[in-house]
Structure formats: structure tokens, C-alpha cells
Length: 173
Image (cartoon, rainbow, N blue to C red; front, top):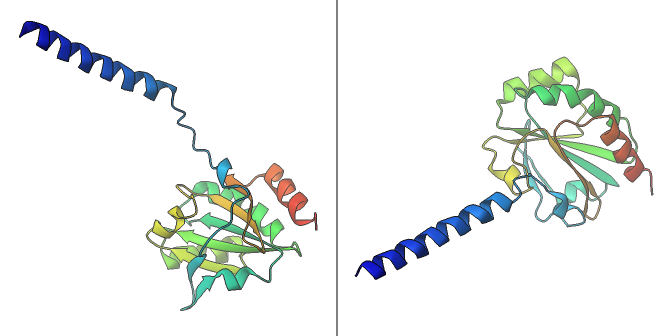
């Protein structure tokens, strides 16, 4: 009996050490590089202002669409906003703003105060729809072409390097 108990304890100990070792070597980085080159399927966002649903058909005519996930309560969203304003002037690009877990009144005030760079304005009040696009925090942005292929994914606020990267892609037609 004592040998059986020792054997069971040894097996449990080896198992626990194995789990511990594996968890130490696992990367905890939030990496969505694997999404680039994939096709977005079933795009569906509810409009923030109207009773409209945005689907693939709304973006088919655009050469490129930047889907930007943002909120009025998000401080980094304020930081990236001037970049979005600059991008909104580009001919080959339309911007879909997805307001994330926010109140409509706050979102509209944010846009009134800082300017509205968005060609389309949608909402994801619960945050559940955004998870389908690999979004877990905001701001995040996804650049797609008119075949819904993901060209770039940006985690965190857009900066001047991201701006240049987006221009390089959209002007490569």
C-alpha cells in the first residue's frame, strides 16, 4: 500500500511539474499576425445612428476599408483620432468606426468635439460582435480590401508609422 501511495504522489508531482513547465514556455503576447491574409466572413454591424445593418455589400465598392474599434471613454482613442482625421481625406480608403461598449450620446459628443473621420458609423454595445474580428481591447483597427482580405491589423492607437503603412498599402493600386 505505501508503494502505491508513493507512486501516485510521484505521478501527480510529475504531472504538476509538466503543466508548470509548459505554462512557463507559452507565449502570453496578444498576437494577431495570423489574421493577415485571411478573409473576413459575414461582416455585420448595426449602425450607431440609424436602423441599418452594415454588411459586406456596403464595403464592396471601396478599394480599402479601415475598420476602427473605438470608444469615447478610451484615452488612447483620443490620441489616434488626428491620424484617423488625416486618413479620412484619402481617396482609396473609407473608414468604418465601430463604437465599442459605449453610450450613443457619449460617442456622438466625442465625434462632435474632435471631428468625425468615419464614412460609416456602427456600434457594438456589448462588445460581443467585435470579438469575432479578433478584437479584445481598443483601439484596434483592421485594414481590408474590397475582397475582404485583411491587409493589416493594428493593436493600440494608430501612430504616424501606421499612417505611412496604411498609405503604402492603399496607394499601391
